[in-house]
Length: 489
Image (cartoon, rainbow, N blue to C red; front, side, top):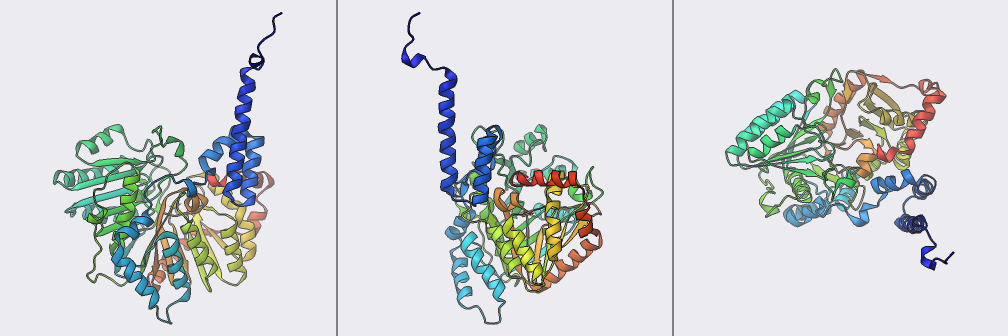
C-alpha cells in the first residue's frame, strides 16, 4: 500500500479542532485582558470551556466589552460638549459658585454625572408628570399638531394598533405641511410590532423612519442583545417628552394582558430640551441617518421658563462609564433618611445590593415597589425573588403592585432628588441597553412623586420574610438557576 503524503495523513476534523483551540485561546486572552470582575471572568471561562455550544454565543451576545470597541460612533456626551458651549460655561460657573447651604449630596451627584455622562446641569426648566397613558397621548398629540418646524420621535416599542393610527394621522398631516418628521425605532423592540402596510404608509407620507441596530441587518443583527430602550420626543427643539411609556394600546388600558397600566412619563420645556435633542441626533446618525448641522436643531432657550435644576443622563453598553448604575448607587449610598424605588423589574449586581443593604442597616428607610403577578416576563420576576430574603433581613421593604401592570421607573432620595426616565432597576438597563434619565433637584417635585409612591404602595402587597423562607425548594432552585443568566434577561 503506497504511503500517503505527510500533509494528507490528517483529517479535516483535525484541522477544525486546531482552529477551534486557537479560537478558544484567543477568546480566553481577550477575557483576561478586559480585567473585569474576577467572578464574571471565571464564570465566563467555565461556561466557554465546559459548555462551548452555549458559552461562545453568550460571550458574543453579552460578554464583549464594548467600552473599548464601541458599537456606535456618535456618543451623546460628545455632542453635548461640541454644541452646548454656552451651557458648559454656565455649568462651570455654577460649580465654582455653589452656595454653602446647597445640599452636598446633590453637589456630588452633579459633579459625578458631569464627568461620567457629560450631564450638564440646566436651571431654566419646567416639567409635568403623567401617570396614565390616555392623558399623556392627548397632550402629546396636541403638541405634535402644533409643530411648525420639526418632529423627532424615538421609541423602543411602536405598535400599529389604534393608538399608533392616531399618531400616524397627525404625523402624516405635519409631513404634508412640509415639516421634517423623523421616527427612530429600536430594531428588537419594534420587531413584528408594526404591519408592513403601516410602515409603507409612513414612508409614502414623507416621514423618515430608521431602525436602531436592525436585527434583520447582516451588519447589526448579531448585536440584538443591545437595545435602544430610550423614549424621546422633541418638537421644534422646544418641547420634549420622555419616560416609561411607548406607543401602543396597553399603555392606555393595559391591553389584552392586564386590567390596567401604571407608568411614569414627563413633558419637558426649557434648556433641558436641547440635551434631549442632542441624544436623538446621536441615535439618528448611529442608525444611518444624516444630520447636516447638529447646531441647527439644538435650540437652547435662554428666556425665563422655569427654575427647575435638571440633568440629562445617558448610558449604553459602549459608554465610557455605567453612568446610570453609578447614579443609582450614589443616590442610595448617600441617602440619610429614605430611598424610594419604583421599577417593574429588580435584577441587580453586588454593588447595588450592598448599597441597599448598607443603607437599610444604617437606618435609612428603603422601599421598593415592583410589578406583581402576573408580570409581563416571568423570568425576571423569578430572579427578583432571589434578592428578597437577604435584603428584607437588612430592613428593605418590597411591595408587589396588584392593580395591573407596574412599569414606573424612578428613585427618590431623602425627599430632595429624583431620577426618572427609561432605566429599570436591572442589569439590562444598567449595562446592556441604551437608556436616558433625568435627575431633578427639587423638594416640591419630590413630595409630589412621594405621594404617588404612597398611592402605589396602597395598591400593592408587602412581601414578608416568612413568605420568602417558605417559597419551596423547587422554586428557589428555579429562581437561582435563572439568576445565573441575569445579564441576558
